[in-house]
Image 1: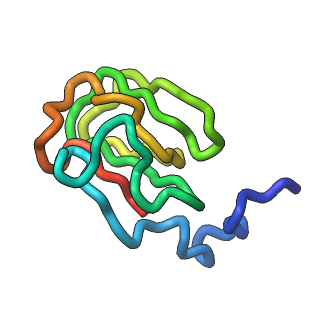
Image 2: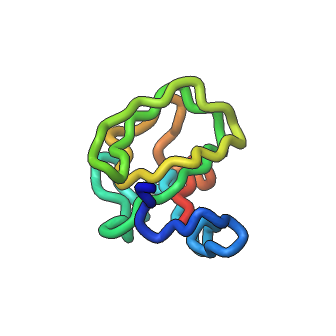
Image 3: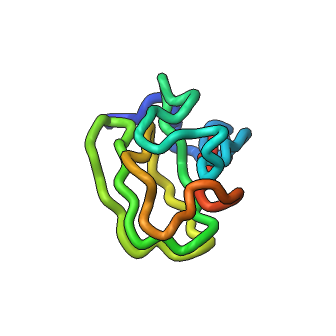
Length: 103
């Protein structure tokens, strides 16, 4: 079995599957789209979309670029990303709660 780094396959026993910190990526004072998300040197972050986002291109933890389309407000994206390539379509770029990085 090929296990992901740090995952033991028992969610209730694996505290790393639950968020313990957050960074509001919608605030330009805290994050600039197109740069590496702080704290993702060893592990990517999951994303929460607080608003509807038409299109968002990310760099996955593996290094692969991927575009997500039609993200609804209140969606949790259970993927591990290290970067949002550019400002997602539908975001304002300086509003709290638009996109949250969950650590």
